Structures are given as C-alpha cells and as structure tokens.
Amino acid sequence: MKEKFSTIISTCVPLPMENVDTDQIIPARFLKATSREGFGDNLFRDWRYDKDGNPVKEFVLNDPTYSGCVLVAGKNFGSGSSREHAAWAIHDYGFRVVVSSFFADIHKNNELNNFVLPVVVSEGFLAELFDSIAANPKTEVKVDLPSQTITNLATGKSETFDINPYKKQCLSDGLDDIEYLLSKKSDIEAWEASR
Image (cartoon, rainbow, N blue to C red; front, side):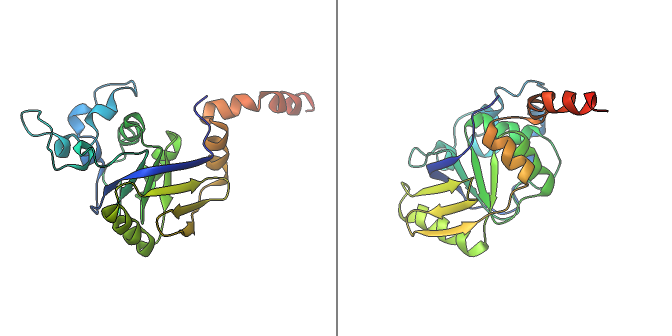
C-alpha cells in the first residue's frame, strides 16, 4: 500500500517547456535497472548536469528558489517512447502531481499507475500558473482529488480535471492494481461460492 492521495497544497517547480519527451525525462542509458528506486537521481539528467556531471545552475531542479511536490510542465508532456521508467523517475524524485495542458496518453497512464496524479488544465490556466510562479516562487496550488479541482492559491482561480474513476479510487486508497484486486478477495470468493 502506498500513501493515500486526498488533497495536496504545495509550492511548484516550473518547467515551461513544451514537448518534453520521455527520453528527456529519463535518458535511455539509465533504463537498465529493474527496481523503481534511484531513478529520481537521473530525472531530467541531461538538463540537470553537464557532461562532467556538474549541476547546471540554471536548470530549475538545481535552483533552490523552487521546491514542492507539484511539477508544472508545458504542453505535450511525456511524449515519445512508452517507458514506464519516466513515471518512476518523477515519483522517485518526489513529485506527487504533474500539471500540464496536455499529456501523452501512455505517459499519463504510467503516472497514474505509479501514484503520480497528472492534472490536465486549460492553456489559459497553465499560462496564469506559470506567471504566478514567476512573480512569486512561493506560489502554492491546491490539488483536491475528491472534488477533482486544482486551485492557483495566488489568484484563487480553480479548474476541474478528469480522472478515470477506478484510478481515482486506487490513488485515494493507496492501492496499486494488484493490491486493489486483493482488497476485493472476499467479494470474489463470495461470488465464486454462489456459482
């Protein structure tokens, strides 16, 4: 069982770049491991570090001005290959929510399967959120899974977001697919016994 997801209020890490693909999220050379742990160390590796392994000061993950468990990304986040390792890296780094105006479908599902909530907002809401963060890096968002709303606490503006009801329940209960099935074991046994 993972940590149950309900409402998160957090500052944000802005990544105002469009078309961020899974190879940029976690480069292919780091895909040899089979355990999910440690992938966060190489999240956005080629943007975070130079060729000698030194942190690139200008990259947002190396800038102490920004922190929080919410990544705010540009349009078309997670395009490219379907590697689940990209979602592993995002989760392992500590992000619980990724906000964008559009996600690649496979990556969006991989995030949900790895207890990261992808929140799709309008382009106008996203632009305003980036503006709020630029004006004040301490800007917080409130992500309310039960009501399926996200609020920019700097402006008070909210939007609703869609989520598959089954995945919403899994996040709310802190269960992956196997754990969900196991939680229904008595119901399944009762149904089988009635046959």
